[in-house]
Image (tube, rainbow, N blue to C red; front, side):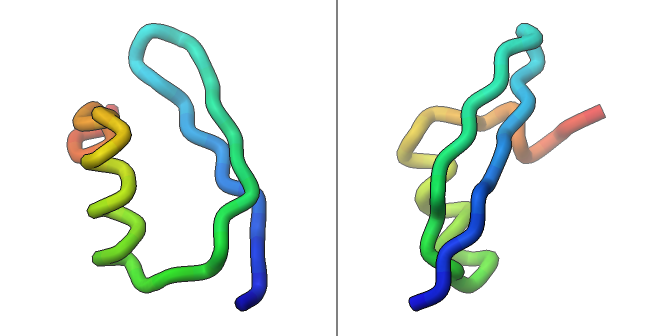
Length: 44
């Protein structure tokens, strides 16, 4: 599959980026949940 760079901005000011295979939103949210990034669910 095709890949793209995803960058996450966390509430503590840190950032993380990775090359992610393009997936459905559901799959992405599942991966994010496994990584412990619950902050993504309610960004301000």
